Length: 394
Image (cartoon, rainbow, N blue to C red; front, side, top):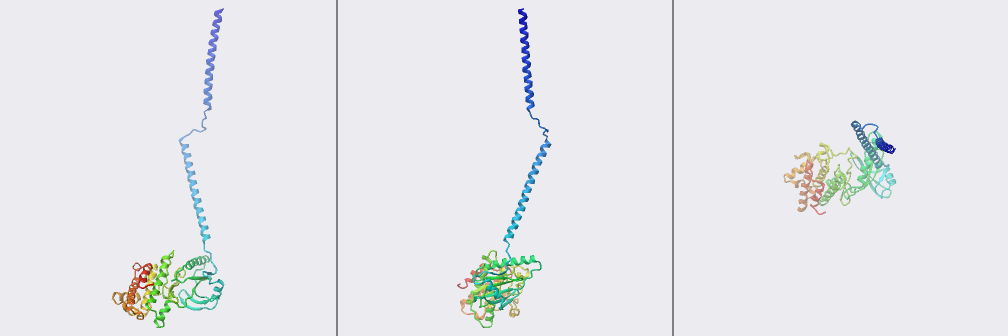
């Protein structure tokens, strides 16, 4: 009885142990399945081809973004530039544009409508003398009508460019330049207003000298030459951008009561393309050989003016055609200097003391080098100022 109970207990104990082991095994298996079920399986398997396509999409997106940004920046910059140019565009002004407090638009317009005294003419216009209501005497240069074509747009562009050039010229101030006091825009041309100088031009003075109506000593002639080259130096070196005269000759050198010269008509070549540079007798060879004009071309014209002051002769004088030196003032002076006979070229009315004669002979050498055929052989206006000033005390 007792043994049966003991066996029963042992059997129960084994069953309990087996059941416990099976329970632990089931729990372990269930735990493993739960952990595996928590792992997220990607919906699509990751392959090398898929990764490559994704990288290409990213690169294409970056490229298109950069290209779009650059295109937008260029378009924006173009629009801004166009607006700035449009806002800065010089408006076309109508009627008189005044730069002097002594002149009023009404008085100037009234004076231009009246009969004016003709002072002279050139290939590109005429000079008139007129008096304003306040008694101020002015000189007016009226250009010939411009040939600007028929399209209205072209007409406006030409007028705007001319107006800009005139505003630059009006800003220049030098004792040896004629100051632009005003200009008047007319339908087909411009009129320029200057101070009226009653003494006239160097051409007028030299004509009176040849007719024995006026005496000009060497000191006065040298002062005129120094003033002319100082005016040129200002245009060539003190103006930015550089301004060339283009039409330097005695007619465009105005003399005041003290015979101090003032350059007129400087910088007008862009406004008047029909200037008579090639036929004036004062133009450099390169002007009509290859239509090239530089500051050395202005220096050549100055050399001609200096030669006129020294000899008293006009470059178009038939006398030069009778000589064996080339039929022009420059070759004639060069021939006499090389022959040691430069004194024969001097105006007999200015020969005087020995010191002055030495100065004039030195001035002949300066004129000859200014009249060199090659522009590179001519001195600059900046070099000529001390060269001439040292001849005499100014």
